[in-house]
Length: 203
Image (cartoon, rainbow, N blue to C red; front, side, top):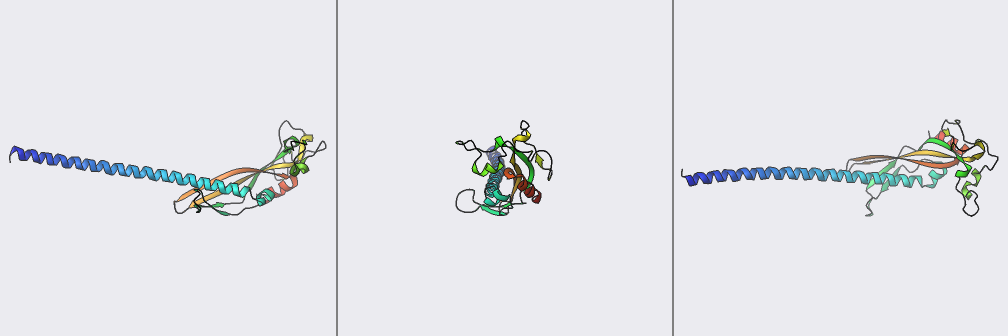
Protein backbone atom coordinates (compact mmCIF):
# COMPACT_ATOMS: atom_id res chain seq x y z
CA UNK A 1 0.00 0.00 0.00
CA UNK A 2 1.42 3.33 -1.02
CA UNK A 3 1.87 6.27 1.38
CA UNK A 4 -0.83 8.21 -0.48
CA UNK A 5 -3.37 5.40 0.02
CA UNK A 6 -2.48 5.17 3.73
CA UNK A 7 -2.97 8.93 4.06
CA UNK A 8 -6.37 8.73 2.39
CA UNK A 9 -7.42 5.90 4.70
CA UNK A 10 -6.40 7.84 7.82
CA UNK A 11 -8.22 10.95 6.56
CA UNK A 12 -11.37 8.92 5.94
CA UNK A 13 -11.25 7.46 9.43
CA UNK A 14 -10.77 10.92 10.98
CA UNK A 15 -13.68 12.31 8.98
CA UNK A 16 -15.90 9.44 10.15
CA UNK A 17 -14.88 10.04 13.77
CA UNK A 18 -15.70 13.74 13.48
CA UNK A 19 -19.05 12.93 11.88
CA UNK A 20 -19.89 10.58 14.75
CA UNK A 21 -18.90 13.23 17.32
CA UNK A 22 -20.94 15.91 15.55
CA UNK A 23 -23.93 13.55 15.45
CA UNK A 24 -23.61 12.86 19.18
CA UNK A 25 -23.39 16.57 19.97
CA UNK A 26 -26.42 17.25 17.78
CA UNK A 27 -28.48 14.54 19.48
CA UNK A 28 -27.45 15.82 22.92
CA UNK A 29 -28.35 19.40 22.02
CA UNK A 30 -31.73 18.30 20.64
CA UNK A 31 -32.55 16.36 23.80
CA UNK A 32 -31.53 19.32 25.98
CA UNK A 33 -33.64 21.76 23.97
CA UNK A 34 -36.62 19.38 24.05
CA UNK A 35 -36.30 19.02 27.82
CA UNK A 36 -36.07 22.79 28.29
CA UNK A 37 -39.11 23.31 26.08
CA UNK A 38 -41.07 20.73 28.06
CA UNK A 39 -40.11 22.39 31.36
CA UNK A 40 -41.13 25.79 30.00
CA UNK A 41 -44.47 24.44 28.77
CA UNK A 42 -45.14 22.78 32.14
CA UNK A 43 -44.38 26.03 33.98
CA UNK A 44 -46.65 27.98 31.64
CA UNK A 45 -49.50 25.48 32.09
CA UNK A 46 -49.05 25.57 35.87
CA UNK A 47 -49.25 29.37 35.84
CA UNK A 48 -52.33 29.26 33.60
CA UNK A 49 -54.01 26.73 35.88
CA UNK A 50 -53.21 28.85 38.94
CA UNK A 51 -54.66 31.92 37.21
CA UNK A 52 -57.79 29.92 36.33
CA UNK A 53 -58.20 28.78 39.94
CA UNK A 54 -57.76 32.34 41.19
CA UNK A 55 -60.33 33.63 38.69
CA UNK A 56 -62.81 30.97 39.82
CA UNK A 57 -62.33 31.96 43.46
CA UNK A 58 -62.85 35.64 42.65
CA UNK A 59 -66.05 34.77 40.79
CA UNK A 60 -67.26 32.58 43.64
CA UNK A 61 -66.75 35.12 46.43
CA UNK A 62 -68.38 37.86 44.33
CA UNK A 63 -71.69 36.01 43.99
CA UNK A 64 -74.70 37.32 45.96
CA UNK A 65 -75.10 33.87 47.53
CA UNK A 66 -71.64 33.99 49.07
CA UNK A 67 -71.97 37.61 50.18
CA UNK A 68 -75.37 36.92 51.72
CA UNK A 69 -74.65 33.68 53.50
CA UNK A 70 -71.15 32.48 52.63
CA UNK A 71 -73.01 29.54 51.14
CA UNK A 72 -71.58 26.89 48.89
CA UNK A 73 -71.18 28.32 45.41
CA UNK A 74 -71.18 26.71 41.98
CA UNK A 75 -68.85 23.73 42.34
CA UNK A 76 -67.50 23.79 38.79
CA UNK A 77 -66.49 26.65 36.50
CA UNK A 78 -64.98 26.70 33.01
CA UNK A 79 -62.30 29.36 32.60
CA UNK A 80 -60.82 30.90 29.44
CA UNK A 81 -57.35 32.16 30.39
CA UNK A 82 -56.02 33.26 27.00
CA UNK A 83 -59.05 35.21 25.79
CA UNK A 84 -59.62 33.17 22.63
CA UNK A 85 -63.24 32.43 23.49
CA UNK A 86 -62.59 28.76 24.23
CA UNK A 87 -62.54 27.38 27.77
CA UNK A 88 -59.09 26.15 28.76
CA UNK A 89 -59.53 24.78 32.28
CA UNK A 90 -62.31 23.43 34.45
CA UNK A 91 -62.01 24.58 38.06
CA UNK A 92 -63.77 22.97 41.00
CA UNK A 93 -64.45 25.16 44.03
CA UNK A 94 -64.56 22.52 46.73
CA UNK A 95 -65.13 21.83 49.53
CA UNK A 96 -67.58 24.49 50.71
CA UNK A 97 -65.94 27.56 52.23
CA UNK A 98 -64.98 27.05 55.86
CA UNK A 99 -65.13 29.66 58.61
CA UNK A 100 -61.86 29.97 60.50
CA UNK A 101 -62.36 33.01 62.72
CA UNK A 102 -64.82 35.66 63.88
CA UNK A 103 -63.40 39.07 64.83
CA UNK A 104 -65.40 41.77 66.55
CA UNK A 105 -65.63 45.08 64.68
CA UNK A 106 -65.30 48.38 66.48
CA UNK A 107 -67.63 51.26 65.63
CA UNK A 108 -64.72 53.26 64.22
CA UNK A 109 -63.90 50.42 61.81
CA UNK A 110 -67.29 50.63 60.08
CA UNK A 111 -67.18 52.16 56.56
CA UNK A 112 -68.63 55.67 56.78
CA UNK A 113 -70.35 58.14 54.52
CA UNK A 114 -67.91 60.95 53.76
CA UNK A 115 -70.65 63.61 53.82
CA UNK A 116 -72.48 62.67 57.02
CA UNK A 117 -69.79 60.85 58.94
CA UNK A 118 -72.33 58.13 59.73
CA UNK A 119 -71.88 54.47 58.82
CA UNK A 120 -72.84 53.64 55.23
CA UNK A 121 -76.41 52.41 54.70
CA UNK A 122 -75.55 48.72 54.77
CA UNK A 123 -73.57 49.23 57.98
CA UNK A 124 -76.08 51.36 59.95
CA UNK A 125 -77.41 48.32 61.79
CA UNK A 126 -73.91 47.66 63.11
CA UNK A 127 -73.46 51.00 64.89
CA UNK A 128 -73.97 50.46 68.61
CA UNK A 129 -73.51 54.15 69.46
CA UNK A 130 -72.49 54.86 73.04
CA UNK A 131 -74.58 52.11 74.60
CA UNK A 132 -73.00 49.09 72.95
CA UNK A 133 -72.03 46.09 74.98
CA UNK A 134 -69.17 43.68 74.53
CA UNK A 135 -70.61 42.33 71.31
CA UNK A 136 -68.42 39.64 69.82
CA UNK A 137 -65.53 40.19 72.18
CA UNK A 138 -63.74 37.40 73.97
CA UNK A 139 -64.06 33.63 73.48
CA UNK A 140 -67.63 32.36 73.15
CA UNK A 141 -70.05 30.66 70.79
CA UNK A 142 -68.24 28.28 68.47
CA UNK A 143 -64.90 29.22 69.98
CA UNK A 144 -63.96 31.24 66.90
CA UNK A 145 -64.69 34.74 68.17
CA UNK A 146 -61.76 37.04 68.79
CA UNK A 147 -61.68 40.53 70.22
CA UNK A 148 -61.08 43.50 67.95
CA UNK A 149 -58.31 46.05 68.23
CA UNK A 150 -56.49 45.95 71.54
CA UNK A 151 -56.96 49.71 71.82
CA UNK A 152 -60.76 49.42 71.73
CA UNK A 153 -63.01 49.40 74.79
CA UNK A 154 -66.24 47.57 75.52
CA UNK A 155 -68.24 50.66 74.53
CA UNK A 156 -66.44 50.77 71.17
CA UNK A 157 -67.75 47.38 70.03
CA UNK A 158 -70.24 47.45 67.17
CA UNK A 159 -73.13 45.05 66.63
CA UNK A 160 -71.29 43.36 63.76
CA UNK A 161 -68.34 41.04 63.40
CA UNK A 162 -65.96 40.15 60.61
CA UNK A 163 -65.96 36.47 59.63
CA UNK A 164 -62.90 34.94 58.00
CA UNK A 165 -63.38 32.17 55.42
CA UNK A 166 -61.10 29.89 53.45
CA UNK A 167 -62.14 29.23 49.84
CA UNK A 168 -60.37 26.42 47.96
CA UNK A 169 -60.22 25.87 44.20
CA UNK A 170 -58.75 22.86 42.40
CA UNK A 171 -57.68 22.33 38.80
CA UNK A 172 -56.99 18.82 37.48
CA UNK A 173 -56.35 19.07 33.76
CA UNK A 174 -56.14 15.65 32.06
CA UNK A 175 -54.86 17.20 28.82
CA UNK A 176 -51.69 18.60 30.36
CA UNK A 177 -51.61 16.47 33.55
CA UNK A 178 -51.55 19.74 35.50
CA UNK A 179 -52.87 19.69 39.07
CA UNK A 180 -53.18 22.90 41.10
CA UNK A 181 -54.83 23.80 44.41
CA UNK A 182 -55.31 27.42 45.46
CA UNK A 183 -56.57 28.61 48.86
CA UNK A 184 -57.70 32.18 49.50
CA UNK A 185 -58.92 33.87 52.63
CA UNK A 186 -61.84 36.29 52.49
CA UNK A 187 -63.62 38.32 55.18
CA UNK A 188 -67.39 38.87 55.27
CA UNK A 189 -69.21 41.09 57.80
CA UNK A 190 -72.30 39.79 59.63
CA UNK A 191 -74.22 40.46 62.78
CA UNK A 192 -73.02 38.36 65.70
CA UNK A 193 -76.02 36.02 65.53
CA UNK A 194 -75.65 35.49 61.78
CA UNK A 195 -71.92 34.90 62.11
CA UNK A 196 -72.25 32.29 64.84
CA UNK A 197 -74.98 30.45 62.93
CA UNK A 198 -73.17 30.42 59.59
CA UNK A 199 -69.77 29.56 61.01
CA UNK A 200 -71.21 26.67 62.98
CA UNK A 201 -73.06 25.35 59.91
CA UNK A 202 -69.95 25.56 57.72
CA UNK A 203 -67.51 23.82 60.06
